[in-house]
Length: 637
Image (cartoon, rainbow, N blue to C red):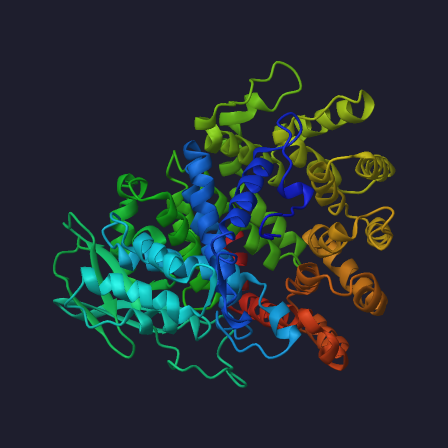
């Protein structure tokens, strides 16, 4: 908590032990400390006048945490993670009717509490990243930073509304763009006073022009009954940054509400292409027509007969990640067929030096499909088998680091941060995709840990524990391993180590053990209240069996959970409700959830938004299977 003069942290967000903790822990400590320090300016020195503009605090702190971490650890190239984290997190929430505008009316305490969510934090940060882009479209200069400095200087020791920020952005923008008729006040308001975001459509207008238009993007969004009214009719001032064949510099233009932007383009030349949203700086998704998508793919990956990833490899990390994520977002909405995403993944995996963040995005999309088909075990096994060799090949490059004897030492210098993360990722995913050599090594490490009390390598500890705990079938030996690990959890003085352990404990595929684990979470002498809801909502719900157990447990113990044990647990209640409910994908469970929560709706308080988001997510999951189930089935056969 960013109190002025006394910042308070959870242990996991402040303490790092280089001999026990992972690099992920170190990076989390960096970002959280940077976030709280940023609040000394955005929140303390200048404070929003009322809670409707909470994003001025949290969005700014979430944006500045990347700047602070990059300054603290410049060799990490930490900006590479920003779109993978903030933009994707915001889209995951903002794609549904259950979302909300960044700035909303606040009239009662529950309204305040509900604003501490991904919209205020991650969407706020993403809007600011986009503002940096249109204030400095060349990628150079400090027009955005100058406007922020002016904002802070003018309003220090005072309160502001979001229009005070926009006024300073407007002033600097007009100084450098005196001929522009665009009002930055209107631009920013269009992004903060209405929910969701635009899908930017790119299509052939005539033989000499590409047309760029916009429409509201929604997943499971055909039924807009009860929709929220928008002052801009769900149209935005969209900053479009694009490049075309032969361009040496990027072009910047505004796509105005209810308008069409025409870009000269020679369709007679089959090699011509256009690519929008450079560096994934824009808070929107790009939907290319079939022809233009094929042209772009040929430019980036070559043809089937002559594959060439040279142009793909030249893209920034953020743009690679954004292109993969956005494609599957369009697929999830039913705008693109699954074949487009499968073809893209196959092309992307042709890059022999793909890099950490694009690899993580590939894995995220494969895992997302895996969760969607979790109710079809045979299909899920075939899906994993289809991609297994790619992760086996990646493991082969780094397996020397994952040996119980004669292992190669991990690189420890600052410049090797992403390489070390990639090694950890390669080992983790190989075990997830059941590469035999990886699983055997994980079990050897665990046996030494259990039988000889030999410490586990910090970078691989999570992978080792999760691999052992997810072993099927669950034998008496596996149950004994679970009890051993539970005791390790109880004995550990480190909150970070406990977190690593509890995420593994939640993977065991035994109903009685998971139910027992849930009961343990209600005993604060065993589990800290700050951890309990995260265990029940995130750890135990990692698998289909865990979600079924968690839903049963929620129904049985709801009164105690909601009214006694966790009353007032602001963030954790949201995470618990969403974590338990959101991944279901069948009509029967959806109706059960509605029947359970409808008479309890008015008492949900801070959990209302999470509940509504969960319903939207489940409806999207059901629609996803109807749209893509056959395509996945045909693909794996």
